[in-house]
Amino acid sequence: MNRTTRLVRRLAFAALAAVALPAALGLSSLPAAAQAQSGGYTMEEIVGEGHRFFGATSGGLATVIERAFQERGLPNGYILGEEGSGALIGGLRFGEGTLFTKNAGEHRIYWQGPSIGFDAGGDGARTMMLVYNLPSVEGVYGRFIGMSGSAYLVGGVGMTLLQRDSITLVPIRTGLGARLGVNVGYLKLTPSPTWNPF
Image 1 (cartoon, helix red, strand yellow):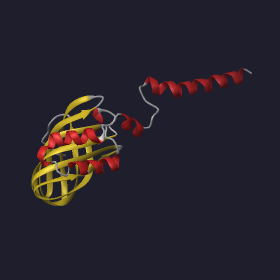
Image 2: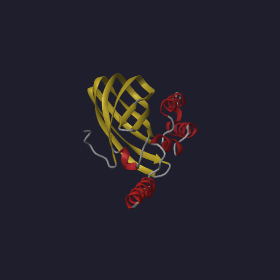
Image 3: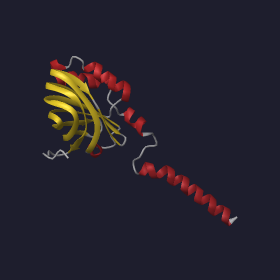
Image 4: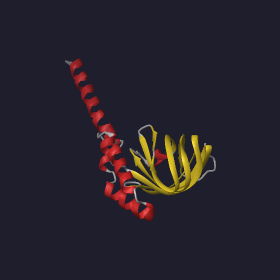
């Protein structure tokens, strides 16, 4: 009897700990995707902000954003900023902007990174990055790997996909310049500016 009582108490304690510990730590029992969807930005919010930010160059913006939403769902953050890049086989990109989140406010952010590929030209771009599955502001800092392609003279709108763990960035750029090629590289996002792209 004594052994059975101890076993029941241990099982009850284990069940209570399994339920109470995540709540005490502020964790939700919802899957990460469901959490992101419930606190995400709608397509109307992002398209409206994109038109305001990009202005007259945003002709194909709604189509590009719609495609991102169809593939990824609702982002739980976005970045608005400007960047410059140049390439001749190897390339570099530097940018800065502001990260917007619904629950953690606005934060200044910087990005830089190298690329390599069949790529030549230079451009300056206004950039909107949709951020998916962002667990915290600190979660966006680090390297995101991806592949991109460009083909325009004077201007264009393009979308790429960058991934690290479960966090996804979808940069949407309206560029001015001349760029042709395909490359692979990464973006390193940091809370302060740096000239080191690596």
